[in-house]
Image 1 (tube, rainbow, N blue to C red):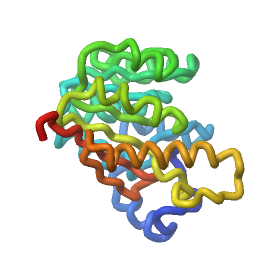
Image 2 (cartoon, one colour):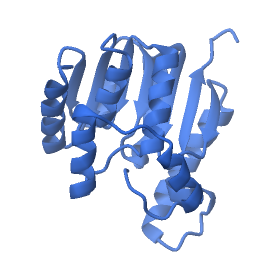
Image 3 (spheres, helix red, strand yellow):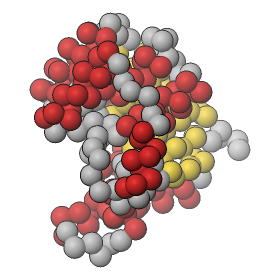
Image 4 (spheres, rainbow, N blue to C red):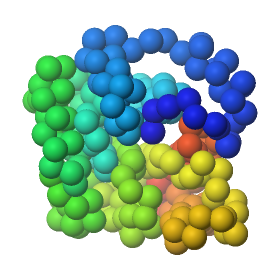
Length: 223
């Protein structure tokens, strides 16, 4: 989520300095960010957004699957970074957010490149056909582990699986957190990361950026 609240992963002073180096959004991306800041709408953190932009420009995926559209910021960011040379299927469970995302995507001129699907992530993943060059997981953290085998089916060999918010404000390292309601999510996310790092399907790097990003490359079957 966009914001400059206390950072439990990178110190606040260091984060402020790093953010000061980032270029400002312009156009529709700036409009979306300004609304998010003004109204408290969840949005990709600034440093994570820049990292995602670099990844898609390096990978140049032709097909991207996104879980968690929000109001369209990240899908527009990725499409813009690839100059529209991409097809993005993005899933959002909240009807109002999906509707606003569609409007923002139309404003950006990317309605022919970005397809918003309204529905439950697991249900949609289960029914999708074909494979993707890249999958961006930015949905509810409780879904990540359940979605992983579906991601594996939908991702091409040597495709990228990018998982956002995997360090959960730094609480991922502590199962004895005071807030009882977070324990199940933390345990599930730890199991998800363990599968990514040790199960053998992926080569994974965990990066303490934003709220934590896992970058996973799907291995070739004969590796």
